Amino acid sequence: MFGKKRTSDIEFLNAGYRYALSLSSNQQDSQDLVHDAWIRLERRYGRSPDKPLLFRTIRNLYIDQYRRARKIRFDEFVESTMDAGLESFEASLMDAEVVELMLDRLRDVEREALYLSVVEGYTAEEIASMTGSVRGTVLSMLHRSKTRLRRWMDSEAEDLGTADVVRLKPKGSE
Amino acid sequence: MTKIDDKLVEHFQAQTLPSDRIELILDASRSARRWRFAPAYAVAAMLLLAVVVLAHQRSLVTQRTSLALREAAMNHVTKLQLDVEANGIDALQSGLAELPFDIELPDNPVFAKLALLGGRYCTISGNLAAHLKFSDPESQQQYSLFVTPYAGNLAEMESNTVEMSGIAVNLWRENDIVYAMAKAAP
Image 1 (cartoon, rainbow over the protein chains, first blue to last red):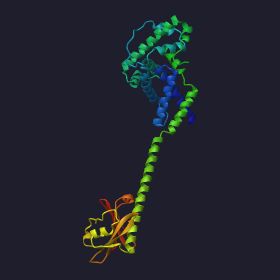
Image 2: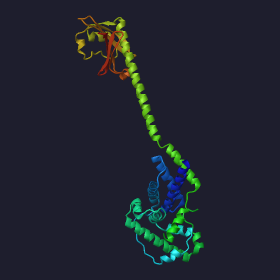
Image 3: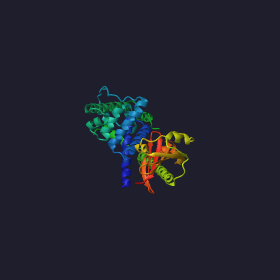
């Protein structure tokens, strides 16, 4: 019983950490975010939190602590140019560093939507509800984020090559 | 799922909290859970303490009042010699010149028909008081009236009427004076 709970807690903690990473794109900040959120919920409810509550608390903490302190832009997504040649990227080889580097170039709202959709499997409507947005905006953001990811990765793969990309350490990975 | 989705899933799934950080969070979480009700416990303890203190104070008041009533009853029955014989308040006040306060009769109309016999110095709960003796011309019943300023520990007493050893004693306050009247119980 206790072991099951511990396993489930660790799963939630890791999910919370990944979500925090999708917001802050910084490992240390993300560890602090999930830590603070978890303790805050334990103190308030006296039990391990469920995932939606944990995500919501992490998001609120992120907005409170990081957006204000660093003046991170968390405003409305503005459409960027659409790229062609998506298929070329689909076929390209990506390693973890490339993905991380490219994610880092996305804005926090874009990374968050991608994470919630692709990794957590939430629908656009659910994401809209979680982030205080509307379904159409989320769908549009997801589409454009993927488009930009594909474009960037395609470009990086061509220009830099894997060795160069590996040298570019993502934030907080030291 | 597209390949980019696969890569994103693969990338995020590879991200996990360091095990020492997990232990740190779970330890802190257990501690947070343990202390969750600490503010409520503190408030409950404060309330309990307040109740105990109030109950204790109440008990002291009751105890002091009871002692003052008993003292008045004892003074009444011992029939000690009067220090001053007087049939009026002014004469009594002059006779008991050491009193640091003016003797005033209470509003109780019963005193209008009683005859003042005189008075003596006494104490009620350690406070200097005047012990006035009256007699009812009709029944010849003796009355004792104790007069003392409303101050010191007398300020913490409460109005009360008791009967003890055949004596009826009434303690009350009017303005800044505490009165106690003792007479034989009916």
